[in-house]
Length: 430
Ligand SMILES: Cc1cc2nc3c(=O)[nH]c(=O)nc-3n(C[C@H](O)[C@H](O)[C@H](O)COP(=O)(O)OP(=O)(O)OC[C@H]3O[C@@H](n4cnc5c(N)ncnc54)[C@H](O)[C@@H]3O)c2cc1C
Image 1 (cartoon, rainbow, N blue to C red):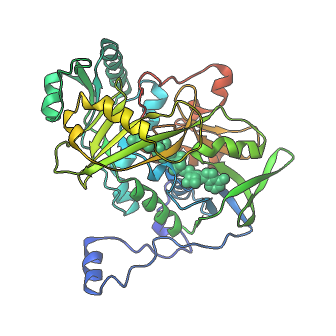
Image 2 (image 1 turned 90 degrees about the vertical axis):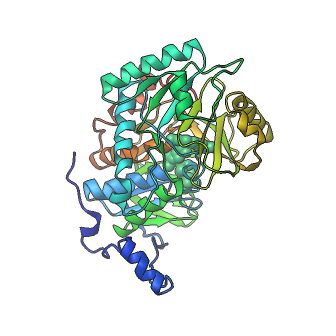
Image 3 (image 1 turned 120 degrees about the horizontal axis):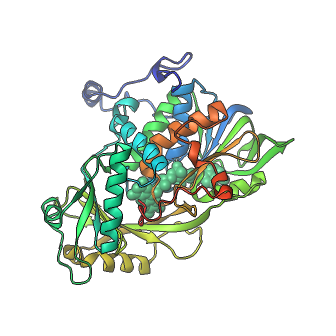
């Protein structure tokens, strides 16, 4: 891997104001008047070495590792709304790396390992909580499928185990393992899996990028991509023309809209994915549980809300909001296995636009336009991948060619029939 550059030691940058218990105590004594801005809102420069479209987790992590691992800091991250306001701030924060195929296990496990030290690395508490994750098997088909995943994970060096219904009940006392339609037959368990605070992941990366001198430009929608002789020269935005040597598209559900501006097509469908939270209740479940057959999953947030997610809409759309029929469908699906949720009130619901590929695996790729790179297709499950994806994407953008983590995720795989099929291992692919 390329040599690491410590963000605090990059030339010409203001030294990092470290967050620490002493800093908090000091600020408490002076009414918190001494904190600087975590990131600034600069005016765009006429030109950057690298422009990244999309200040979600993946765009920000790509920028961060471009600086940290490759010493490239002349970077602008353009965001049409506010940073982290896309899927990164709308997801249910499940983190795991128990995927079936080798390339997936490699990139998701890299991400998990980076998550384990991310708070220290960024000096920003991302509230990573490796509380354990269970994927329930509620049909014989799932039992076979998950046992196969456990074997695959062992070969990949990813620690997972198959656990019995009794062990499931021990870990999740609120569960009903004897449901009449879908009894719990066991579970695929990853003890290292868990959750993190989604906003904090975006904010932590943003702060670290700003400290390296990178420009995060919010309220700046890219509405055109300029090319000359098969290479990108810059982008047109709502805040003017911005030139660049390299362009990186990291726009999740809007990736195909941007690709169209550059004159190529992506094998992506955009769909709304929804979630909801209950009113806060006392601690009752300290693991994450996914129930793929009935199509729902839940965890309990630090505030006490039950965080509940379901599947995608059955039709392509760009609606960034929730719908009553989905809430009903998801809760109805889960209530047999978790009878207690029938007594909860819903606090709020929302939706995000996810970018789905045919094999349910991401695209980290060069494109038909020489110096445009694309990172998309994380679909319903890309929050967990943010650090690994940023690491791999930075390598691809810096070197112009993928490293080992991204090598299999080029978009040519759809032309060549080399699918990385995760649709079985990741039914509700969060
Ligand atoms: C309800 C829900 C639940 C989910 N649950 C999980 C989960 O539990 N675990 C998990 O791992 N994943 C989950 N995901 C998926 C995960 O959220 C995404 O895969 C991940 O956040 C994608 O990050 P991103 O940075 O690629 O996209 P985003 O965070 O969406 O960032 C892309 C950014 O690009 C910007 N943009 C788009 N077009 C333009 C333009 N023209 N100009 C400028 N900016 C533009 C957008 O405004 C957006 O901020 C969930 C998603 C949803 C919606």
